[in-house]
Amino acid sequence: MKIKLYNTFTRKKEVFKPLKSDYVRLYDCGPTVYWYAHIGNMWRYLVSDFLRRTLKYNGYKVKQVMNITDVGHLTEDDLAADTGTDRMEIAAKREKKTPKQIADFYTKAFFKDTQRLNILRPHVVPIATEHIKEMIELIKKLEKKSYAYWAGDKYFVYDISKFKDYGKLSGKKLADLRSGARLEAVPGKKNPFDFALWIKDPKHLMHWDSPWGVGYPGWHLECSAMSMKYLGPSLDIHTGGEDNIFPHHENEIAQSEAANKKRFVRFWLHVRHNLVEGAKMSKSKGNVYLIQDLVDKGYDPLAFRYLCLTVHYRKNLNFTWKSLESGQKALNKLRQQVGEWKPGKKGVSEFEKRFLEAINHDLDMPRALAVVWDLVKSKYPESEKKASLLKFDQVLGLDLSGYRPAKPTKKVKELVKKREKLRKDEKWQEADKVRKQVKKLGWQVEDTAKGPKLKPVS
Ligand SMILES: [Zn+2]
Image 1 (cartoon, protein in one colour):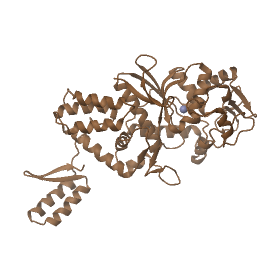
Image 2: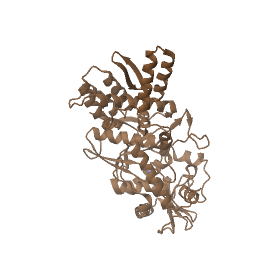
Image 3: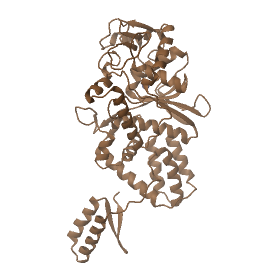
Image 4: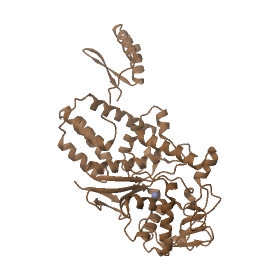
């Protein structure tokens, strides 16, 4: 069955086909490892995971590469201006560690979180500081082809006016960029959006020798250099957050296509950013949550994964504690159902077809989840339903097969006994109080002919 993906480049849904038969070259812009990744970052990486799993589900071989940025990264506002403060340096000073120690620590933390969310680890995770040589080679190529010049004596920059297709991804026009720039231009830049390839700065905490003096590479460079090294000059799919479209991805295209004279990326996939309680996440609002914050409140990290499955990636994910709670309940219920049913080999083809249609339609995970619940409620034999649901879990990643039915604690059992006694004594009000207590502990008491039965709260 065909996979359709929304391509930012053409602004429409297109049938996806890899360049080389059944082999997909997938590249994701990875994290800058100077701090913990928050739930918004994770939402973006979850979508990449849904994509990779969907491709695999369709029988494709996937090679996924994701970079780790551990060098010379500027704060977002300063990115295009190439000025400002380096976040790795700030972190190193703050924590009294070397940039390498900072990078190692937060890279580890990042993968701990992705693992908790069942995000498959990319096949190759190149680290920027280990690829300075490749970046220098790329700059040399661009210099040789006259795409680079010195802006003052510190910045060796890319000349966007030389790349005639500049702006083709974001739809921005060169003339508008020149006149409409609100950025404080670096003296000597022809266009304020000409971006640094190399920054000469021997005092920078991390620096390397290069033909352009001792310094460090520009941020945009690493994705071009590393994707080329591990995936070749043309990628099938490149993902990122919507804020990466300009200037980062535009600059990646400019560098890569100028160097290789080949189309860099065929499908650009961008994830909308997320909100928290309807508002933008910001440190000042105190609503920047980490996966650990969810765990500390007693949630399963996969409840967050479930929540992310309920929203299409081209819509804003609005995180609320209430929605996370619903996600947790739904996940519990689903696992319980699957866990209680007897296993079987044969699935329900009607539903498997519908599920595939949903995920192949621009990763419509909300629709896929609806298919899941329709199947759960359907009249098919339980073993068949279970077989299909476990198959779907290859994409959903909700760990449905690892489920062990929850067991009520000693305390819960004691309370149920107490309630039984109160009921026998016809102390209804007190019995009801105990029932509520039991519910708070996650269990529902159902009175049957054979006595009370416990069910996890759903
Ligand atoms: Zn990138």
